[in-house]
Amino acid sequence: MQAVTVQQLHQLLQQQADIQLIDVREPDEHHAFNIGGTLIPLGEIMVQAGRIEKDKPVMVYCRKGIRSQLAIQRLQDKYPFANLYNVTGGTDAWIKAFGTT
Image (tube, rainbow, N blue to C red; front, side, top):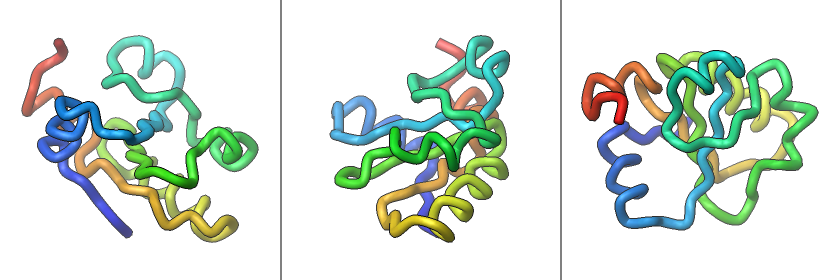
């Protein structure tokens, strides 16, 4: 599985790279803090797979990186996605590295 660190993701965001961010946490987690990703909770990822880009890198994140791994595994088992990246450590790592602003 492809992965990206929060530092690498931060750099991509600063460079305004053409990527898609997907947050697979629950709505209350997303509203409390997010890094700008589109909310598609893990339980809805398969029925909303059509919202995920196929022609650019897609960074998938959650709180610690476990749900995002599951989401990527599920998507890759059913669809030919080759552009999905797990954000290692998720929002916990982001907050530790960059804070909440």
